[in-house]
Length: 386
Image (tube, rainbow, N blue to C red; front, side):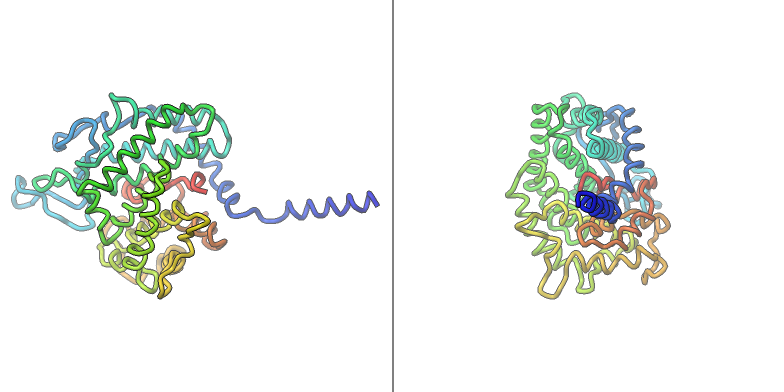
C-alpha cells in the first residue's frame, strides 16, 4: 500500500511539474537574463541628475527640469523669430539632456529593482538608493518637485503644461522604490524623504495651472497625467488622489477617448497614428494595472456601450501581430521602429490569460535603443509591476 501511495504521489507530483507555468512566471523567466544584464550595467553607473547639465534657453535654475517642444523648429524665413510647429517632426537640435538623464535614471532604478525582486540580493538596493538620494534628497543635486520649464518653445513659452508628460519616466522609479523599500538596505529616513518629494510633486500636479491644463487634455496627455499621478499616489499612500484617478479613468478617459470599436480617434488623426495609438493604449493599461484592486477592478470596467480596456487591446493587437494590416498611412517618422514589446501586451496577457498576446510580446524587441521609442515607452520593466 505504501509503495502504491508513493507511486501515486510521484505521478501526481510529476504531473504538477509538467504543467505549464502561469503567465507571470513565464514573463519572469523570459526577462531574467535581460534583467540581470541590465542590472549589471546599472551597478556600474554613477548618478546623473538635472544639475549635471543646463541650457541657456532655460528660464529655471540648475535644479529645474528643462526640455523643449519636440515638434517646434526655427522659422526658415526669419531665424530670430519664434519657433514654428511641424507636427510629428522632431527637432534634433532641442535640449534633451534632462530628458535623457531621467530616462537613464528610470532605466537604472527599474533594472536594479527588477533584479532585487528576482534574486533578493541587497547589492541592487544599495546601488539604487545612491541614485534615488541624488535625485530627490541631496540638496546639491536634487530636482525641484515641479515642471515649470518642460517643453518650452523659444520665443513663445518658458514652459507648458504639456511638458508634464516628460515625467512618466518617474513611474518606474516610484514602483521600484515600492519594491525595495522594505529591504534591509533601505534607510527609512531616506525612503520618507523620497516619498515626501513625490507628495510635493503630486500637490504641484494637482494645483498648478500647468497640471490642471494637462489633466484636461483630451488625448494621450490627459491619459498620461492620470497614469503618473496614480503611480505617485500609490507610492505615497494617497487614497484620495487614487480614488480621483480611478473615477477619471471611468468617467472621462474611457468614454471620451476610446471609440466603440476600441480605437482612439484623436490619436488616429495625428501624423504618427500608429505610434500614438500604441502609446495611449500602454498608458491606459498602466492605469488599470496601478489602480485596480479587489474592490474596484478597472480591467473589467466598461461603458454602457461596451468600451473597455479589453476592447482597446482587441482592436490594436492584430496590427501589432502583423503591422502590414495597419489600415492608415505609415507614421511620418519612426514607422519602422514600432512595435516593440509593448506593456499592454504583457500586462494584458497576464490579466486576461491570453497566451497568444504573450507569445507576440516575447518575439518583439525588449531592449529598444531609439530615443523616440524610449521617450514614448512608459515602462520597460514588467517584472516590478507583476
